[in-house]
Image 1 (cartoon, rainbow, N blue to C red):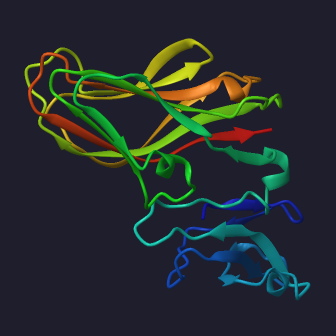
Image 2 (image 1 turned 90 degrees about the horizontal axis):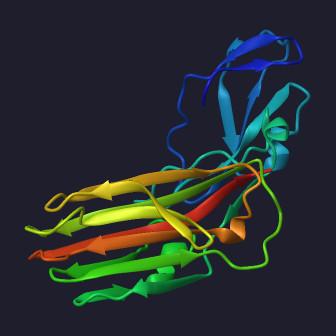
Length: 241
């Protein structure tokens, strides 16, 4: 949690502390007690029941958060406390389909829907052997017309195996598509380099139609020997109204 200002008394609330001992994959409601509106250093409390955070006039509700599953990436708050109303509703949109738009020799994909199942502990596996170039697209469902002030393409991925050598260009390129235009690369990986679990992002312009946004992952084994394996744990759009 970060330090923030209490708008009731314009006092600063120190938030440089961690809540420890929480269970995995559990919704928590975070609050603190400040009966005299003194601000400063407060002790944060948490409960799995929201009414606990509202059960006393001395309590101030900070917000809720769902903790990650064991082994998953860190999660963030739900934006329902503090400045949540000012920052706008946050929507998460996931792809509905994945299509191999370019099929090269020696390419395969397994468990493709794991890339948009909402679980960052599962993943789609993309494999490209030397001698081929392939492209895998993750597309949003059509018919979404709502416009957002901010749209960010988020990809959670890793590369546990990369023995490609002697080829042309990068072994992997993640690119953002807008309709038929693109891809605009925002994450690349050279031959022979592996990568631990990583979060890569691309920000679209305001008022972009989210149904036109998609991810294209290009695995380039052209003229190379070896193999590159990419695990895509999750692909989604983070949209703020």
